[in-house]
Length: 261
Image (tube, rainbow, N blue to C red; front, side, top):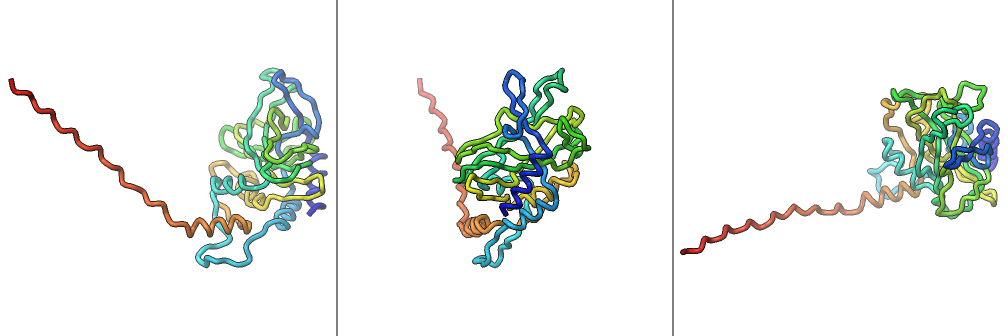
């Protein structure tokens, strides 16, 4: 697994350069200051998710399956339970006039929900234009045509538990991308001790949004749950439903009696 995430990090580092920005609009180019998104190659992604996806070996509820069909909302809920997840995204305009000097950026903020001190992380990103059609994401300095799923690394971020990284930073893009909407996801991370974690739901995320799909054609995907999420689903299915009380009507006011003269 360590070899897998190291390979991803090296690929992302070589392919993408992330920058930090301040309120004054100045930038400093450095891969270690990166905070935007990225794409994972098909081979690496498949290997990573296969290695880390786990599920319960036994079931106490035969009527429930370990594989569920999830829409985008349900998948987002599963992603936010993971040790490292994307907490917010933002399209940042550094300059309306000088795009060549201060390119637009895709800001991605990640939150450390684990107990690990995270050294490096990988994220992936997809985007659409104003017509909700898929857009190839291209670096500001890029000799390729871009990718529908773009990947990159957050190197040496020193992200401690309970903290976020990526605010006021971003992935500088080519001004011709015409991006209106984008989504991002954490692929994996590595700690200072060499421990690696790969997102078990990345493969489902890529199946839902990747491959140049229209935003209007996003449909449900099959998600193979981790043992923890599966057990939580079983537990919730056994909890009694909370009874709803019928609304009580306010007592009718009695008409006041007229006083006799």
